[in-house]
Picture 1: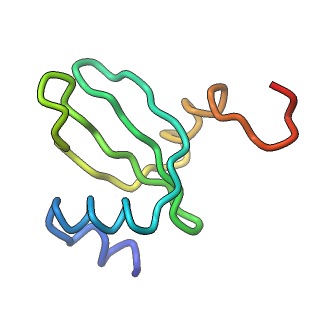
Picture 2: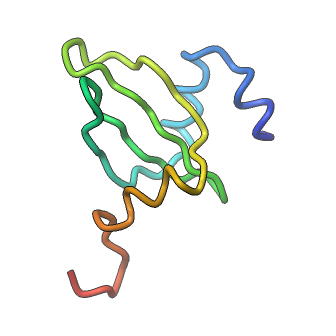
Length: 81
């Protein structure tokens, strides 16, 4: 699936596709949301969950700057953390 095809999917279809194809990496707090970062192929996807309802509010392709904020928290194999 291309980035454009993904961006044009309805929210429920995006969620299903990420959960079937993505690899969970990390969660960060962002205001009243928990943001889960997933890797799918060469792309990274952020899934925003409402803290109060635990429902998906938004799913977006992450840009390089978005991914950088997770780097300190992600443990890579063999990095000794």
